[in-house]
Image (cartoon, rainbow, N blue to C red; front, side):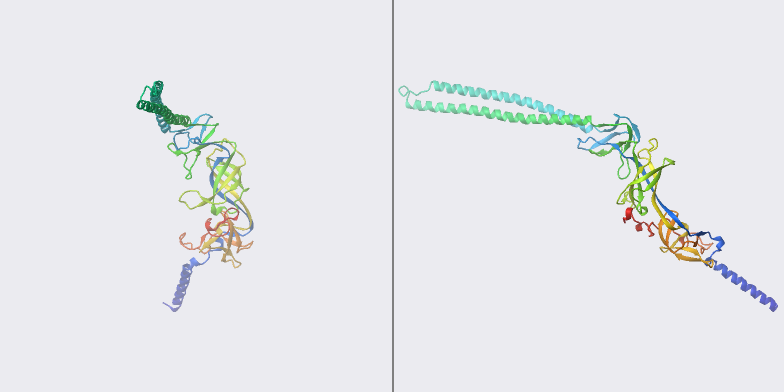
Length: 443
């Protein structure tokens, strides 16, 4: 090979080597500006909305509860279907009557037994009293005969006979007193025994009447026309046949459909700025094409768990409805609501323009040199798609909507810089739900 050809081959090899090196380092150089979507930072209004799920409930309703005078557990054997339309006077709940019927039968038997014992005792008392009266009459008659034929004449009777006669008179007088006292004491004992038997008789009669009264109250009738809505427990489960209830425990309710409200639950992390008076809208899950307007009437002061074993906490929010459509709005229907938490003025970016790495947030700003620079920013309030920039940018800056330094051959999700997810920052600019604040600035 000629020297000129050797020099040419060497130059070509150097050029190829330089191209290979540039290709190998391509992952660390920015893409062409023409390939990057650019967003110009401008002052804007960020309207914050939070989504919440819940259900409709009546403002006023007639509660269906067990009879208040039955202070014992009752087992449900019949229950009207949840959501059924009922008429006044219709049976909506029936309780098991087995125990009450057995109680009534037992007390009825006890009453008959008490009546039999009372009649028997009266017969025995009558016989005993008659015997006591007869013994007293005999003793008094014998006393009269002794008094009539008393041996007191000393000229006729000896001293011994006179003393014996006086002793007989004293003995007979004692017999008369004993007979009278026995008659009186037997009468008192008879009255006491009759009293005890009468108490048993009265007790049996009272308990039998109570059992009969309870039997008459084991059916609950609808107090007015309406929709029958079963009560839910803490787990969201409705009452059902076989459940045991107690006095004054709510089983169901028959609401007045002309006044309704919505109970929805807002995540604790999304509740900053949530307070009474905020506007809201909602749709029924069963009729998503109809939009209803509402107003926040009340917000619970403390977030609570909705489900056992799930640590996520929610604020309970009550929405007052602006209109009531009695054909669509029924108690228990599920709703999806959007609550307006107010608006904020400032520099607002699309969520995809903000990136996160190691719990720090940044954007890629286009510099005058037409190169992109990584600029740290501080975030403010946010929504699912937009976020407020507190510090780091000025109006007129241009930022990339995608990472200009990402390798075209890199696999998605394999490396560092990723767009900040909607859950990464909260309204206060801090990371995660733990940095959020509740209604009216409560932590």
